[in-house]
Image 1 (cartoon, rainbow, N blue to C red):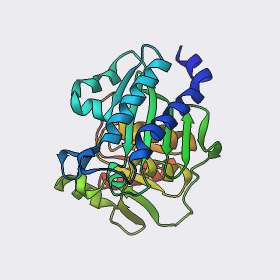
Image 2: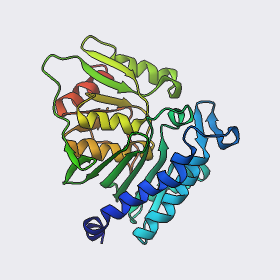
Image 3: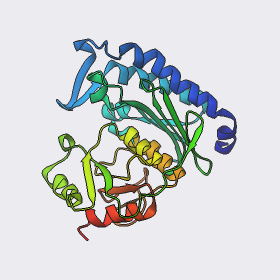
Image 4: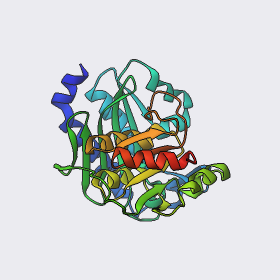
Length: 274
């Protein structure tokens, strides 16, 4: 059933993602009123009416396209953490981050995106990364490559001896212990910086504009689309215990992503203090 869906309905998902942005996100971009922005866990964890309305739109549209599927969305999980358990079930699951980079969105910066991935029993099958303010739609289907606006992208490998460019979890969202572990990347030959929108950082790795990532939070909606995207562009990833990060299980953190396997291994080894 899922293979048939992927063969016939990719363009319908693409259209649903674009419409969610056109109807619920872009009309609010740089026009948010104070009452349309709330805090969740703290002043740096923001949610807007655009997040909520776009997730509602996508939940309705995606389950209509694939009857019997479930949705694990960032805002739904915030309201009911039990929703996350669908990732371990037998039904196909849409993993949705309606506005990835909410902080940037609130500040009127264009570097935000909508992330959608389709998974089944933990396997990532397809993903969509749509940056409406940048007019870029990135898609990936397992075994079929990664594309930006219809053009295939490949991650390639860093130039031999070149400094590795690595984006890491932002210090605003990390504990002192997590920052201590990420600081292991502050070594000669590595240039690290705090990440912005996770989805767009994954895209930079898939394009070869960044060499790697180091993240220490497990939220599937931030990672699912990007992990498949990087894999289909030729990249690699693994947790600090040397196995791939999966959305349907608990993972050893942090985990490393690289534009090729050697880069991912190098980042992982540094994170382990090796």
